[in-house]
Length: 294
Ligand SMILES: Nc1ncnc2c1ncn2[C@@H]1O[C@H](COP(=O)(O)OP(=O)(O)OP(=O)(O)O)[C@@H](O)[C@H]1O
Image (cartoon, rainbow, N blue to C red; front, side, top):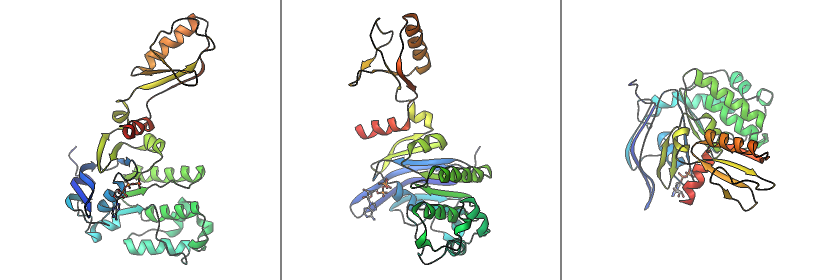
């Protein structure tokens, strides 16, 4: 397929005075993808997104969003929903008025009651923003981002401060938009969410990509782990393992299923119980730890 990418970033550089915050960054997001921009604190994620969202000018490089310059507000804004980390709602407006205002500002058209229903804020429609809880404000942020069913949705730390029901509701709403072909760019420090949901991940560190690819591509560079404890070591282990500080054994492997099979067979043959057995694929957390250890 040779479709024009929804986001096309070529050699983006951003300087704050002498500080080089984003360094020659290139990436593309295709239609319908959920792309997660992840990274360490201060890596440059927000700076990059500010340029892509049209809030900030790049020092150099080319950025195209939905086929336009992101600075071309009239072309881009009606098709783009943005959930920022911190909302700028006026505390004196009600929930309903806030959603209406965003509709007017972005040029998107929708039913206010529909989006309030999506985030379970219907009963709070007449409440002033200043009287909402932190989680309710977050849900209002999301409601304004999905108002008008945008083609491109930016979610910056969308689930921070949300309880599990609200988180599930938010992701269901995102899934529905994606079924209709929406493209989503996510930043989050909840790596599990990114691992579960992202089609591709750009992992930033100090202004550049450390790695970019699918979850599988990112995690396959590190071994999976098997952990267990043994009351007595009655027979020689069938695999190389290290002994952790708490006495448990740790096997690191690129062949999780095969090595687990070997270990379970060995335990069975020797009549041994592997206590506190845990086996798991590499997680994004591990990729992150390796990055910050580097
Ligand atoms: N307006 C600014 N002026 C000067 N430096 C800035 C400005 N905004 C960000 N920076 C610096 O640029 C770097 C990248 O910041 P940015 O907010 O883009 O990182 P981030 O990846 O979003 O971080 P976090 O995960 O902590 O939110 C940081 O070192 C930050 O201190």
